[in-house]
Amino acid sequence: MTRILLLGKNGQVGWELQRALSPLGELIALDRHEGGDLADSAALSATVRRLAPQLIVNAAAYTAVDKAESDSATAQQINATAPGLLADEAARLGALLVHYSTDYVFDGSGEQARDETAVTAPLSVYGASKLAGEEAIRASGCQHLILRTSWVYAARGGNFAKTMLRLAAEREQLSVISDQIGAPTGADLLADLCAHMARATLNDPSLTGTYHAVAAGATSWHAYASHVIEFARARGTALRVAAEQVQAIPTSAYPTPARRPLNSRLATDKLQQAFGLRLPHWQQGVDRMLSEIL
Ligand code: NDP
Image (cartoon, rainbow, N blue to C red; front, side, top):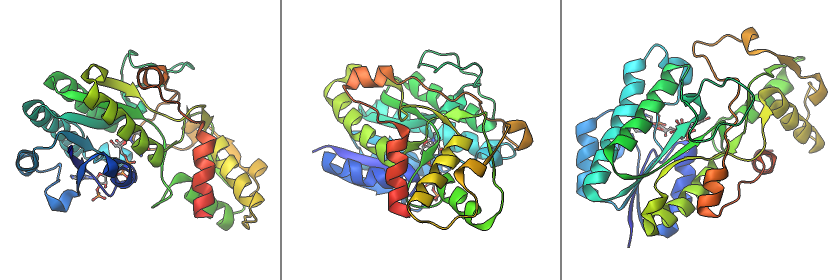
């Protein structure tokens, strides 16, 4: 029976992984208080050595993108040093490591979707720390799946759609950025992809590598917000702002400590072909999430 170690079990993706990984074997899911603290390298190594899993799935990360700009040492430890350590332990055990990365490893120039061979050039401390994590994993020589994703949401906890619905109920006006383009991707989809891909890679180690893993299609935050509001109003939710009243603003009108890529389009042909999987359109997952929360 495959022994699976899941780290970051209570994050958006980690929570869904608890469900999706459980049929694959003996699942040991930890948070930072249960021996899975990525800030404590010695304790983390000891945990991996004690459990000796065949599959390690790391859903833990420092995801506070703006905060990372003034807290780079912590971001580096959690997003780069700890994944590198997990990779070294995986190499020693002959285990497969699954790890998540981000569209923020790219600078987001141009209009085209980037594939896995595109040049990386992070704009933020967070993006640089995630890229360093990827590089440490690839350098370790362990069997790995690095899944680069974007704009992750889940029904559980806070998310962009819930924030838009709250603001559209409270305010007379709503302005949302329209020049950042990407694909909202459900944590449930990412967890299911992980289970399918890990199972296939345990059977065929030649599948090891870096893959772009996002829902199909692309939208802007503005169009995403408009869609959410339209969906909710059609379901009878009382909102003061209508979808067509949401104002489009450029990123420059909404300054944040961290710079974000404008073009977050990721090409997923490699994943779909290698694993025989199909990535559904982003609206399908968002509508399902909205049906759950409304
Ligand atoms: P979340 O922020 O929802 O979850 C991250 C988890 O990591 C939390 O459970 C958090 O625990 C845990 N964590 C933070 N620090 C530590 C630590 N020192 N030790 C152990 N656990 C820790 O992230 P997502 O589920 O959204 O992200 C999953 C992956 O996807 C990450 O690798 C992220 O970089 C990547 N990604 C996410 C995107 C997004 O839009 N969210 C976009 C692109 C990529 P606690 O609750 O205790 O803080």
